Image 1: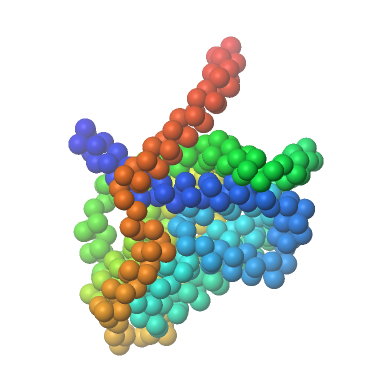
Image 2: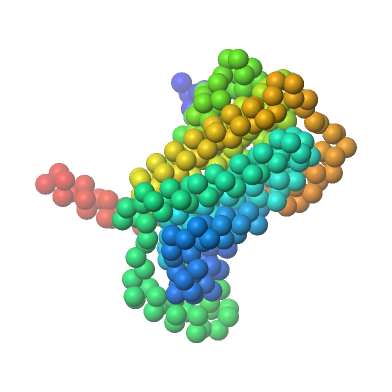
Length: 362
């Protein structure tokens, strides 16, 4: 039992170390959005249900080379500033699936046929998630921004530039970052448990045999695993080269990149249960549909494309975009920041939690 617990903790910390740089970067960007974005203007651009707004949100997400954990704080910053649920979900879906680093690596390692289906499928699924969010969102369709908050943001924008930046970073780290960090840590522990108890070799053997694992099961498996596009595209390329059906590989990659447990926990806590159901339902269903389409179009006679010379160049370019070359020391420092923010959040909420416990006991 102790050995299993150690494996779970070690795996969870490895996930944290890999995602922590993205999280810290996203807190910085979210703070800048909070300080410099005009809530009134943002509501005019993203505060509606128009399909054109979903396209704008998806294209904006595509431009950011961030994984799913890193894009959530920025999406939440938009949502808390007046963006509707649909555009927010479209933005958060597009970034991890079809960001520049992921597309470069996909075209190099998976070939133009699979990569094109993956890119188009990712974009269409992003739009579908946004449409579903606008259609089925209830009270969470729009976060009501209090007038006092709008006035406070306006007052910050009148401050000198350094003070605006500082105010935004204070919000990005001590408010949004603290909330996100505590939920992300819980999610990473859950993800660490799944990965530690289900070895990579077992997953690879089943994903590599489409006769054993159906596309639907691949979508479900990807939906609960912690998958980064840049890190798992080489694995997906190896599976395809080993004989895995291209549709199954696309489904696993798309569902895994678009959803993971830390992200879902954060959305559940900060945007509501219905938002999670819409997000997961559309992502898993969309990944399943894209996988079926890929198998139908490419057929059983598909020949894998794996150009090692092109892959080497793409890996170097993608590594620069995705910050894969960050030293371990920096990853550990960022991981410590996330743990510290989570501890700060728990400590800040401890008095209220104790008061609720005493009232319950009384």
